[in-house]
Image 1 (cartoon, rainbow, N blue to C red):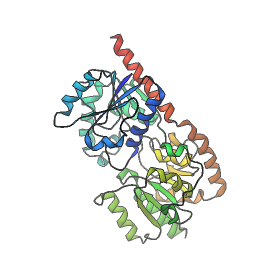
Image 2 (cartoon, helix red, strand yellow; image 1 turned 90 degrees about the vertical axis):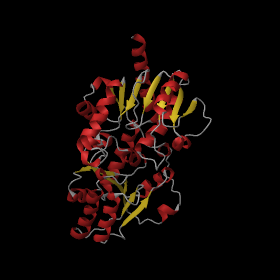
Image 3 (spheres, rainbow, N blue to C red; image 1 turned 180 degrees about the horizontal axis):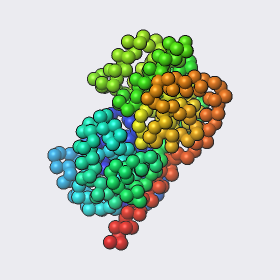
Image 4 (tube, rainbow, N blue to C red; image 1 turned 30 degrees about the vertical axis):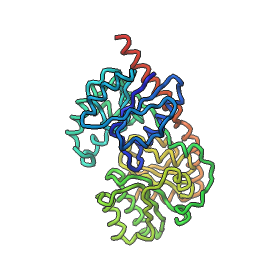
Amino acid sequence: MRIGVNLLTLSNDRYGGVEHYVKHLIEHLKKADESVKLFLFLTKPSRDIFPDFQERIIKVMLKGSKIQTEVHSRIQEHQIDVWFSPVHKSYIPNIHVPSVATIHDVLHTRYPQFVPGEFQENNRYYEKFTPSFDAVLTVSEFSKNAISKHLHIPKEKISAIYPDAPETFNHYRERFQNNRITEELESGFALYPASYNPHKNHLNLLKAIVFLRDHHKKRIPLVLTGFAAPDNRTFQSVLSFIRNYSLQNQVKILGYVATEAMPDLYAKASFLVFPSLYEGFGIPLVEAMKSKCPIICSNRASIPEITGDAALPFNPEKPEDIANKMLRILHSETKNALISKGMVRSKIFSWDNCAKETLAVFQQVIKRKDKR
């Protein structure tokens, strides 16, 4: 099978969930079937995300103002069997081979104010392209239902396939690297790794920290990770809140932390707190489970589906509820029970399974095209 992978809009910034998905899935698609050959359609800014000279992975470099026109000729030149677009809103019209796209979530349908273009512009984009997809992949049953409902795609056309945490978490063995990051942190800290986007709900988490301090006389250190540009409005609002409520000595902002360092960060955390209002999947939840880090989390979107019974849920719009769950998870009996449940739950997430199920969808659309 010759798979053309549309990575023309892939970001070379600090990796987020979509970039992790793309990088790990490509490597495991190659491992899952020796007959697979992957053609990565790239532009120069993202070429170094993938190593050169990999077996059965070929880079197809495109440049200039006529990239879309060139895509079609390169698909024909390389005899592509299926065209795969795993990155948000990277779609190209008039593809003449079977086409599969991953839609990770439809955040714009629930919180249009948080997404550039808001509701109408985003829906028009999907209305233009989704009829040409032979199949749609997504990352949870929640997202499958939301995509079907809001984008009017039949459910039988959508496959929900769970991704996994980055590979470094699958090799975690409770080893602490005495690195500078973890050495400088207070013991007993809560961890929240997230980008500084409005739906990540940082301010309600900070309000919970203040509530614990002022009403329960309980001081819980908080560590935030995630890249933010200096002009990011959400990031600036977080900084302002920390200053206004004198949290400078309690909240530690680490910025971007390399993936390889994250398992040790989870392992040293007292717990993961995950107050996001909306997730298509929520990779940090799986990262925490695989690192034996107990979880308290939002009861919204896909989050309860991913954690199952391995987390304490809260209402992310009520800081007092977040605070109360933070107090509960400090009890060793509760914490140990969640760790045990998390280790069991984490086994359902596998890049090998993700790749095999993805290939099965590719094979189905190719077979359907052959029968026409």
